[in-house]
Length: 208
Image 1 (cartoon, rainbow, N blue to C red):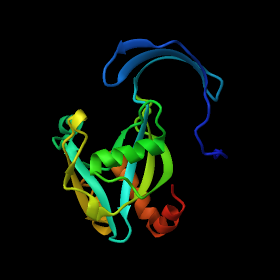
Image 2: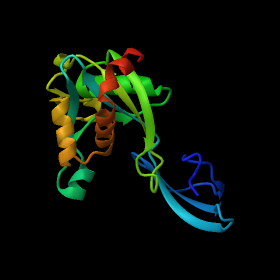
Image 3: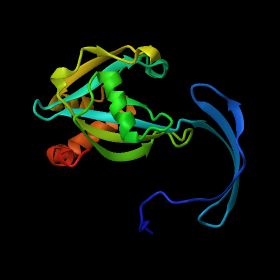
């Protein structure tokens, strides 16, 4: 039968306290769990989880120029996975302690593309890899003047080396269609843009 809610639902689960496997930039934990499934079965499992926490991603758009602002930076995981570590991305970063998601989005824009958005709209949240991590990304749409974006940016204290890329929206969507970029938040953001391009002005008019 079709799911009438078609939504993520709470699970009937008993969960142990975490066993710490490693502590670093991200913590790695092991849990023992007992899960009662929808058909009444009891399943016992051991699961290892990377605690990624709350993250924001931002798609900056210049409506007057018909452009999006992307970034390029090195990612070791991209290099190891596909030999293409110089990755095209959108603005993104962790939400710091005591910070709102919107505040983190503004801060990350300033750090990574050198400009604080004129307007900001929260779109939706998603789990990046729920099979292994609790990292949850909240995606924002931002409006800005792309002419103010410097060619290079990045937080010096984080040793970031970021190149900014001003791209016509049509060109960005064409690259999406060609499948030349592998960054998940970027792909999701551009897919959303392709579906909602005609609504951008109305959405940003309601932003904060």
